[in-house]
Length: 146
Image (tube, rainbow, N blue to C red; front, side, top):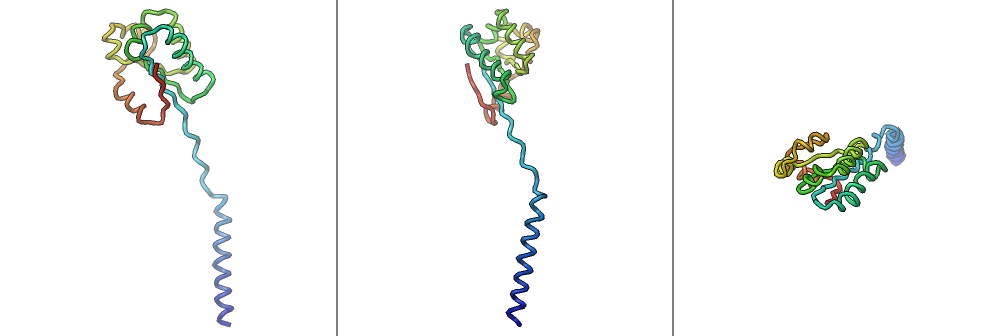
C-alpha cells in the first residue's frame, strides 16, 4: 500500500507538470519583432564619378528597393563642396530624400567649405556629426564609406 501511495503521488506530480506545460503553451509571449536593418552611407569623396556612379546610386537603390529598413546618407568632407556646386547631384539628393533617405551633413565640414546655407537650402540637416557617427559605428548599422 505504501508503494501505491508513492506511485499515485508521482503520477499526480507528473500529470500536474504536463498539464501546466500544455496550458502554458498558448500563453507564451509573441516572438520579438525582427531587428530593423539600417544602412549608413558616409560620402566623403570629392570625386563626381564616385558620387554619380557608385555612392548615391547604391544608397538610393537600397532605399527604393527596401534592401534596408532605414538608409542614412552622411555628407562628410569634400563631398559637401562637390554637392553644393553640382546641380545634378543636388537633384539626385532631392529625389533620394523624397524616397525616404535621411540625408545629413557635417556642419564643421560644410562651414570649412563655406557651403552650410547651400546644403540647408536643399533641406539637408546640417549638424555636428562626430557623436552621431560614433553612435552609428557602435550600433547595429551597416556602414559603407565612399
